[in-house]
Structure formats: structure tokens, C-alpha cells
Image 1 (cartoon, rainbow, N blue to C red):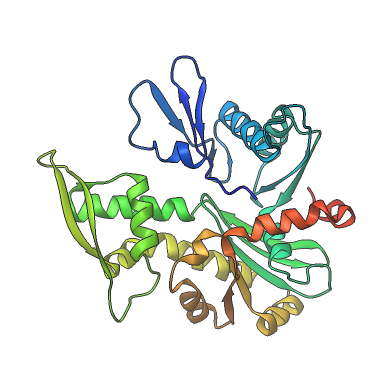
Image 2 (cartoon, helix red, strand yellow):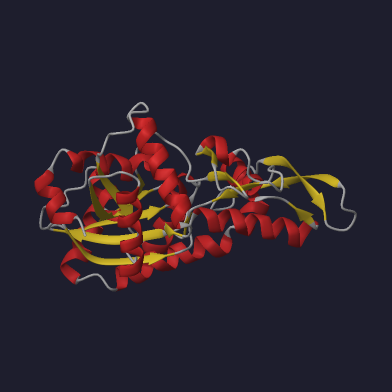
Length: 308
């Protein structure tokens, strides 16, 4: 299994690919003018077509041990609210990257399969998949999505909220990478009884000099209030639009949270308080979609039912 962030770095003038994945991500905020670090995916969809194609080609080659003539089948997870134009861009990027067949599947469906929910049965299952660019909320029954809602507020929006908070409160400019590090270290969705603290270093907006401040998890909880509330409101809106019979099933079976955002401490507690439903976090939330897509490669009949 290959686990890499969707980041690519290229030579600015020649557009030659220099690094992909984790190696490229380490260059964020540190690259000279001659190197451009790109996130080809924004909001769960392609923002840079050439970059996405190059990234996919690199990953295919790396997985197949540098064998360039391999033409695999590819299944790509996409947000529920993706448009026809965006679907076409995703499919074309996969084909041009060297795939012989490209299948698209909604990410919440893939996540539900990955965590082992009984998606093919006439039972309502609610999944909340909080990724980097989007939060997907879906109610699934009989191998189909009965209701889905996608908002472009997720992990990246949380990082941005922390960056803006540090700028607003401390006049401290930090990068997205530092914002993500703060989120994963002391981030929380609910105030903690014993707050954690960590030093955060950035550039003072007044003096232009490097500065370090101590930040507590209570402050980061406050910084994350807006994006977290959007996620909670999205789940509530989905519950309000769920058919009564399926709502009864969800009361019995609860809600499952997956994706990197599920690792935010206290998010399950907050959702439980706001909805009154049992809420659980998947055992491997970061890999739920991948596990689901992987199992579909071995089950072509189910793939035919659930692919877009």
C-alpha cells in the first residue's frame, strides 16, 4: 500500500516534475522561486489537471516497481457533489496517466465498504467522511446512496482556521504545514479539562522577525469552532432529510466517522451531544476509503452496482 499526500513540485519554467507526495510536501513554504509546489486537488476535485496527471502517473509507476508499460484498472474516490465536468476531468486524468479503465466511486460509499457496514442490505447506514478538502455525509441502503451532502469544509479548512487565528490573536504569520502540525498535536473539538500547550513559531507581522508563542488546546478549540460547526450542521441537515424508516435504523446502528478529520479529539463526543445518536470512529479512519476501494477491485459485481 502506498500512502502519500497529494502534493507535487515542479521546475517553474520547464514544468519538469521534481518530487511527488511526502517529499514534495516537505518543500511547502521552503521552495525557492524556481520551484513551484502544487496541490493538484482542491476541495476534493482537480484544480491542476497537468499536476494531477503527473502525480497519478508517478504513483502508478511507483506501485508497479517502475514498470512503465503497466496499464492497471483504477478506482478513484470522488466527492458526492462532484459535477459532470469534474467527473470527466478525473476520468481523463486517470486515462492519460496510463490506466486501461477508470472507475469513479463516491467517497462515502467507499468508506462505508471499507469499515464493513452492511451497505447491500435494506438497512440505513450513515457515514461521515471528513477528508482534506471535503466532508461527505451519506445515508446508504441497498448498495445505493439514499441521501448525500458534501461541503468543502474539512481538514484543510481547519488548518486555514488555525493560520487565521494565529494571525488575528498573535499577529503571527504561520504556514499551512505549521497549522496542520498544531491541529494534529493539540487540536480538539471540545474544551479539555487539562489543556495541552505547545510552542508555535512564525513571523511577527509587525517586526518581520521570527517569534515563538505558547498556544493551548483551548485556544485551538476556539480557532476550530467555525469549521467544526459546519460539519455538525451538515450532519444535522442530513438527518433531517433522511426517510423515517432509515432514520430509525440510524438510531439503532449509529453514525460512523471516517477520514483524517475523525482523528480530531472530541469530534465524536460533540456529534453525539448535538444529534443524540451513537457516534463511533472507524478503527482506521485514514484508510477507510482505501480499504473500500481495494475490496471493490476484487468484487466486480459490487463495483458495477456502486460506481458512478
